[in-house]
Image 1: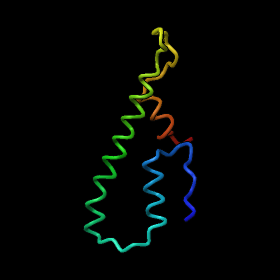
Image 2 (image 1 turned 90 degrees about the vertical axis):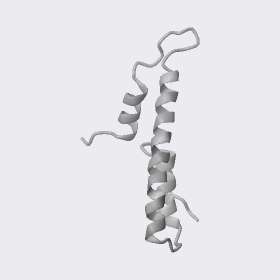
Image 3 (image 1 turned 120 degrees about the vertical axis):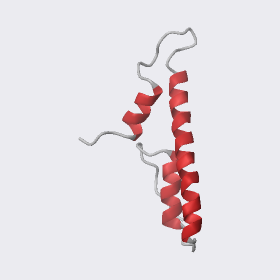
Image 4 (image 1 turned 180 degrees about the horizontal axis):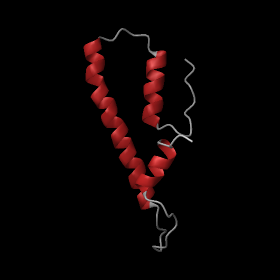
Length: 85
């Protein structure tokens, strides 16, 4: 299997979903996929929150001095949800 590389603007969960769809030629019942969709959405939300929390934790160094001037939410949106130019 040749999985695609993860892009800079793609989260790990998004990469997994893309590759799962691309490389799994298994028969999945429509009802089963419908049941899986909420879990995938929840996984993406959980990953988003982890990225935001990690960024917020790194806003100050060990002395409490600011090292990053953006909120985790702002970083996530600029990195993974860029506005079209």
